[in-house]
Length: 317
Image (cartoon, rainbow, N blue to C red):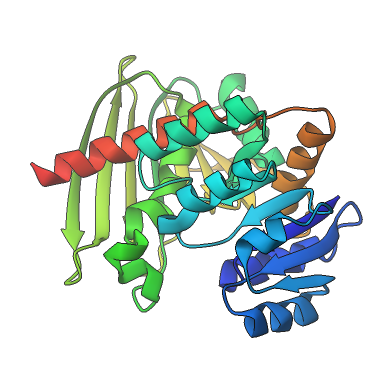
């Protein structure tokens, strides 16, 4: 399938290194607002065409799937642009700035019958089912709480600290903690509490989010743009606990008993990088005439943004 990339920034380069190794993909086109930048990107990553205009690329009849790699502030606009041109799109997380925008994208995609999905990679990985299977097996007993964290020293990245680019920890890395929680604890949420610290530019830099479920379970999520955290996701049960290493691209899973003895170790299947799964599923869905991902349907992208909207509303109180 001919894949095109809209936006030629750092994440586009990272993902392209995976696309180059996929036999199922043709690196077809890349577009940037700067033609020279697009041409340089195409040369470095083996894309056949380079465009200095997004719409011009979307008008190319050979483009079959567009990967949107622009800042969060532009996702809504660029997904609308893809839908208007009838182009299937896989959009970088966070899907939009807020749930209202996400609901509009879901409406337009359904109306035009165009495939649109959020490229939040853990949703598509085999590790997702592995974690659920272990939880359902009863190996750690009844699960009461989970913790998940993701922090990187990225406060020097321009798009992170600029509010006009929808910067901040929540939309960039907090989305992973929320995603991890929803994948494995579900949606039956009773209430959400949170604490936050802001940067001088006004974006959130650090946050702690506590989510209480109607069945009594609790999830605690933490994110920051300053330190490097251990990035673990831990499920706590009455027979032991399970540690998932790196919640945004799990590398291994270890299960311990109540005496902290390692009782099971699970290796994650070998992969190119982990990005390949979202492309493989998207291509399969498109080829079958589908308009939504199975692993990340649009109502789930809406639900994630509704939670982030609730968190941000809480911060304003």
